[in-house]
Every structure is written in C-alpha cells, then in structure tokens.
Length: 324
Image (cartoon, rainbow, N blue to C red; front, side):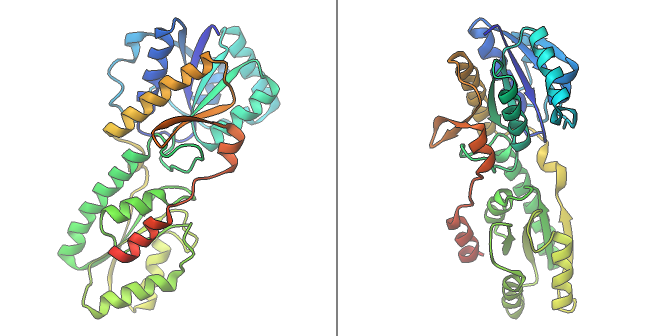
C-alpha cells in the first residue's frame, strides 16, 4: 500500500472531522502518505484530491460538518463514472481508501470493489441515524441525540408555561433511534417511531388520560419516518379528534441535529474507528465496515452492513410507556 485516501459521503455527521484527523495521523504514523478526497464520490471521479499533513488536520477534532465536504453522486452509479474514479485513484497512486458514511456510501464501495478489487476499501459508519448493522453506535448519533434533547428541553419550558401540546419531529430517516432516546431523556409523554406497531389510537388514549387529569402540557416526539405521518400530520389528527381541546404547536428540528460540536464520546469513537480503519488496510482487509460492539472492534462485510439494520431495543420502548 502506497497512499491512504479518506473521504466523507452522504449526509454529514458530527465527528467526521475527528475521524478524518485520526485516519490521517495514523497513516502518517505508519509511514504512509495521506490524501483527502473532496466531495465524496464526485470528487473521486473529478480527481479532487488534496495531500493531508500531520498538522494540516490540527484543530478540526472539535468541528462539526466535514472539512472534505460531502456530496451525493449520480455519476458514480454508472459504470463510466466508476471507471473514471478508478482511473483517478490509480493515477494518484492511491490503493487504500477509507470511506466515512452510511448505506449509500457502502453500497457504492461494494459495487466498486467487485469491478476493481485491487483498490482496498474500509468503511466507517458515519450517520446520525445509528441504523447500520455491525456497530453499537455510528459517528454522529451521540451528538444528534444530545442536540435533540437540549432542543426538546427548551421546548418543554415553553410548553409548561403555556399549557401547550408540542409535537417535535426529529430526524432519523426510517429509524427511530434519535426519537426514542431523546424522548426518554426529556420525559416525553409519547414517542412515535417507525419500528413500533402501536397506532394513532394509542396516542389518543395517552392524551385522553392526561386530559382527564387536567394535564394540558405534553411533549410528543415523532420520528420523521413514522408510518402514521410526520409531526404536522399527527398534530392535525389530534386536533380533529379532540376538537381543539389542546393548544397544539409543531416544531421540526431538522438539520440542526446534523451540525454542532461533537460530544466527547463522539470524538473518542470517531478517533478509534479512524485509527483502526488504517490498521485494517495495513493488514490487507477490504470490503469491510469497522465498528465497535461491546467496546470491541469488529469488522462487518459491506453487504451485511447494508442489508441488515440495527433493531430498536424493545426495553426502551417499554420505558416510554412506564415512565411517561
């Protein structure tokens, strides 16, 4: 192996910069050159490479976003696009690549490896959704749930002051990990997630119970991918059911959850996975995602990480019911 390249792809996540830093410094420590690929697969196709030095990645561990930027690439979905990406990597003497991202990133890497197996790829799970199989936590998740928790705490203050029912929608695509943990941490009256089979009537029963006890201040956390609908749709259903007995407000937290300074846990996880990714390339590993399970480093084939998704802990769903 001559050079180690690193890129970020798909949605940005807090902790990606800490991971880039770890990849670069580990590669240099073991005597390899480190290269950054800007704009993910798009930059790979365009040959948008930059040499990264030891001190060139100083003072980025605390930053959100990604210094290498991120992009989605339609061109990489084509054979011609992948061929050009391969040509650019070979021309730059890059034969080891660290890909930080999620499902789409690993899907692209998996297809690329079948066509050009001589380029080694190791993936690092970087997504706030925490929905990848093969790791307890993905880079970005811990910061996202803390951001959501702090926002919901603030919303709860004004909900109590005005006796209002707030529907708060959090991100997570088709996974309810952010909604569930932030809901528990803030004492939400209900949490709606795609993984739960409980329907709208269950929410109605919770609110009816609170209404009989003159509890007008309520927080309902909604995962954006919940099959019952987003926060606005659920708010409308409740408004119709209770004939405007509740003073209802809706807040969409949105992309605020993807930014911000990564937490301490985030920085440590990102640094460890970044270091282990380079060591994996040195050992000749390829086509694998590096993750942490029960505090131990594990490697999961891209195909398995893509096809299987982590399940919600049913005990946490029970906690919402018991503690709300």
